[in-house]
Image 1 (cartoon, rainbow, N blue to C red):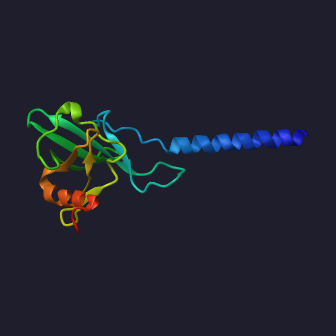
Image 2 (cartoon, rainbow, N blue to C red):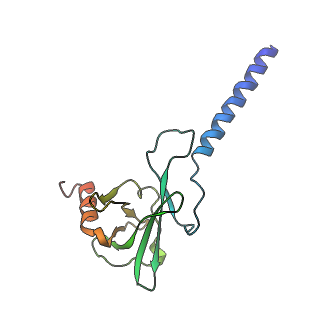
Length: 155
């Protein structure tokens, strides 16, 4: 009878250790300096479970009052800038007010665009109010990606 208690305790401890390791591994890395609290961490290569952190990127968007435009910056997990540009609203190309610049954590990071020739890669930014933000420098390319994903444009 005593052996069953010992086995039960060991199995319970083992299960707790597995749960703790999986929880710890699923946490985003430490936020780099210069990345706001509203920035979103986007993992690359998401798997059902993992034993270490998955590499990813931080996307941060803000309203630049000096330019009167919305800006977004994509950095790697260490804070190195990978892409930064003025972003325009899909369709209207107008700036989004600062109060509405809240990233949709469910949709942002699932659709990416970029140009191989320029070496650019960036996520299509979805906001909680339903707006979509696209980079000004690659607006037409990103717009085509959104239209393709929505099924309104063929590749």
